[in-house]
Image (cartoon, rainbow, N blue to C red):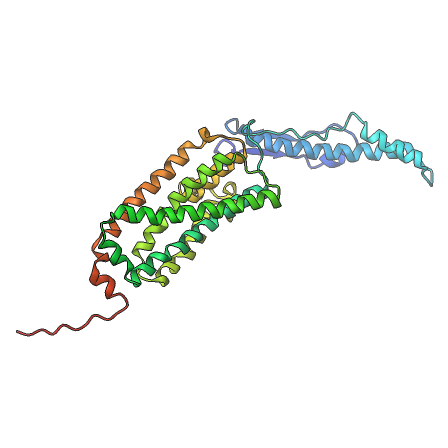
Length: 325
């Protein structure tokens, strides 16, 4: 009934006397029932059962072979032991090979070192961006921003200049970490050109988002107050703390939407041998996110909050006006 209601993908029935019957080399069965719409689940469970069955057969064959060879002798000569090992290893009743059921035959498996190297590189890039936007606050407080706005410099020039600095720093940082992990831990990252493209596009997207907070923040405390929450929340939802496959379905949807999640997915595809053709949608979406936030940055930068009186009155109490009739 659970199968029919879709509440269970697989049902396994193991008879109560299974182990005893199997050890006595008598016929017995394990029943596996599965949802035909979920063949992968059935294959996974079947693989586990096959391995369990092979272990039982191994113990059975070992016991019978040793008993037949040793009989009732008190000591076992070395040649007898070697004969036992040879008979066990060459027994045709053993089948210890576990069939693999890949979801993508062309995909290269990813180990834990590869996954978390990628996850940490992406996570620390967010903190790097937050550190760099402190320079915008410095320019506000030192009145440098007012002098810049009094020049013929276009708003978009200033915004893109700040963004370029963030992108360059993030790319250099991530490149250094990638090279170190490749040399020290022998990690295989994949095609260097594809890695560079992903790194630049991701730095563009995440840099545009954090740059906006730099323009909005009034002081360094305001910048720092958002750094930790964004870092931990984005890292958790993006798959840096918990692997994306370990997230529930509802959070996995978010992981595929936010920029650092898209970056992790793209890096993983490179490690698995998937070219840019298999990740161009994620890259285009990252570029779209960056462009949207560039527009927001220009709007905020060119707004009234950056006028002369606002800059010079930063951190000061407003003077009382002398009103007279």
